Length: 262
Ligand SMILES: C[S@@+](CC[C@H](N)C(=O)[O-])C[C@H]1O[C@@H](n2cnc3c(N)ncnc32)[C@H](O)[C@@H]1O
Image 1 (cartoon, rainbow, N blue to C red):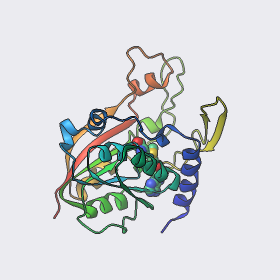
Image 2: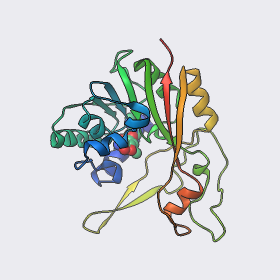
Image 3: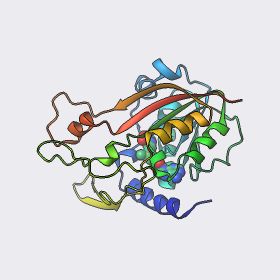
């Protein structure tokens, strides 16, 4: 069942994927070593060969390529058919098979309970207006002891203006849970390989506060394992650049959780 927000976001993600945004470029040249580093095999996941993995709201042919190359049994679930086609492109190119399923992350009824060893969700939960249905569905489809990787927006970064004003990056908005922040930068300009620029409407994106994220995960039976802040690596970033902004206020938090239910 797709509601109005998901219908709009499907259209906008299809447009972004067709314009080949960064998140829609499959990792055709991935090596096994790069794949293992990308999904933190050394520190968090171990050997994923033979594991049942759900890449959730994760289309585009990057995450699935990492798991597929390392011998996992991969299913990708995403709202955008264009994004899912990139996962099939990556699988064909590397020579593994991938199952792709289209739908809204708040409804994983396509899968039976206790199906997956790992649910891998890159930055995408902020495209859902609420997080409880998504996290409850992940708890349902994970096997007991299964691992959930979840990236989400640093909600403080969403209250900041990433335009340098000479002194800093002003906080421009209240810290409101569930707010649709799409009105900031509603149009994105995407440069194409041939130098032309395509404009797309930004998908609906929502702020979820830290208390909402952590308390919902705890309520659904997830035990905290690890968190890291994503920043753009750059040794001496120029004030006002994206790298500088991320080093002042990391925009993405990457977390690992173990599901403790039965
Ligand atoms: C930033 S991309 C993340 C995927 C990418 N592979 C990566 O490495 O970060 C966000 C993805 O979320 C998907 N998405 C947005 N809203 C969704 C929803 N309600 N249900 C399922 N997928 C959704 C988009 O189609 C898009 O593929």
